[in-house]
Amino acid sequence: LAKADGRATWRFFEPEMDVRLQVRRALELDLRDALGNGEFEVHYQPVFDLQENRIGGFEALLRWNHPTRGQVSPAEFISLAEEIGLIVPLGEWVLRTACAEAATWPKYIKLAVNVSVAQFKNAHLFEIVTSSVRASGLSPRRLELEITESLLLANNTATLAKLHELRDFGVRIAMDDFGTGYSSLNYLRSFPFDKIKIDQSFVSGMTNRDGSRAIVKAMTAMASSLGIRATAEGVETQEQLAWLRAAGCDEAQGFLFSRALPAAQLPGLIHQWNDQKRAAV
Ligand code: C2E
Ligand code: MG
Ligand code: MG
Ligand code: MG
Image 1 (tube, helix red, strand yellow):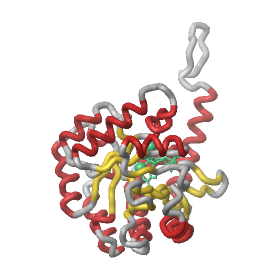
Image 2 (cartoon, protein in one colour):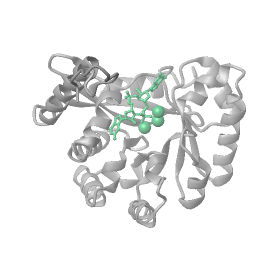
Image 3 (cartoon, rainbow, N blue to C red):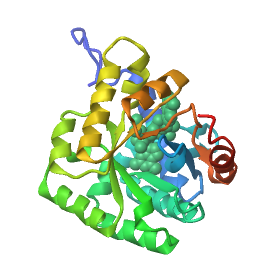
């Protein structure tokens, strides 16, 4: 196909495409070995409770310490891990690691774990969740699973049944990146979520005149009238925080408080925010 015959104006393999493919293949090969090589690490970003004025939970965020590339972002490898089927064992590892870690935190502090679509569709998800919780000794009420709207696109009964099964076990369900999906409101009607996480694009827009402020206010009011919590993602400035407080948002998460940190740094962070700084934010 790539042969240049007088008339051909396109080629199947462009040189740049070839390079990109090679980079991707190399990353894929490395990814297949990374779990066995112990290259993954879970970091934890605090979720600040705006009513209690303290850290109320942490979100587990996966980090890949690549031997030569350094830290590779989840944005670069999660979808690849989904495609090659690695997300199922990888997601299980995250869940087990994070539950064991969270069991050492003060009891009022919760843990949130991201669950990808492929992981959710896996037949063993429920067993993986229950066995991670039981092995760690963590109360299921302290675990929250974050799912995205793409999971609910099909809106099929099997997915809803699975969500209910998990919720009956005691874990909470949060809808991540709320507002970025195709039909967010419809999902709130078909499944009783415990929380929406307002996508950071709305939060960053709050200081512009693009309507984001009104949207965040409406989302928060809606969550409140449905009896579910609203968390704002990607909070970077005091000004955004002030707007979120005024809108009645329950929780805030973002670089203003802290980036995701290795487990060893959490006791210090909890002490700093929850024992020393309580009046400061
Ligand atoms: P997410 O679940 O929406 O996580 C929030 C992302 O926003 C994290 O990026 C976090 O570091 C980043 N973030 C937090 N605060 C701020 C802020 O103030 N400003 C900005 N600009 N960004 C902020 P991260 O860690 O790179 O993760 C990206 C995405 O990768 C996550 O989005 C999640 O969808 C996925 N991911 C991460 N860890 C896992 C995992 O263990 N399993 C699965 N399935 N997906 C994961
Ligand atoms: Mg998340
Ligand atoms: Mg999110
Ligand atoms: Mg996001």
